[in-house]
Length: 133
View 1 (tube, rainbow, N blue to C red):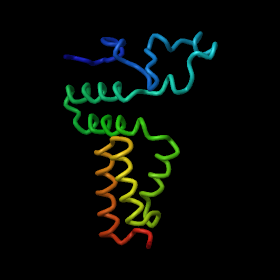
View 2 (tube, helix red, strand yellow; view 1 turned 30 degrees about the vertical axis):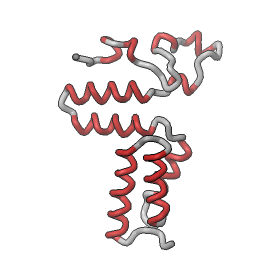
View 3 (cartoon, rainbow, N blue to C red; view 1 turned 180 degrees about the horizontal axis):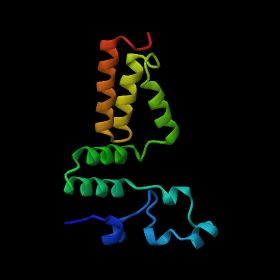
């Protein structure tokens, strides 16, 4: 199934984080308040479709990026910023990074991102750049 360009061939498959369809996002709906910021945020399913488009075009790394982004849709923005800061050298302990990975996997069903955190933890341990407990 050739999905590219998704917006032209299958606009009915594109939905926001709140389930709004592309056709619902109009200036009128924005002006009357029936469309808010969450209504224009991309959904997990749309990101997964974008990953499929990338794979069909042989862009494996781009597809993997879309899948990781899809995993993070459910994670609140402030939590993503905290995770980002924790990944910097000397910002988190081994336990804190392990807890982040566990939470990503258990609470947000984000196993790929959780494994990324675990890989980072191993690198931080080897380079001795963890914050001391």
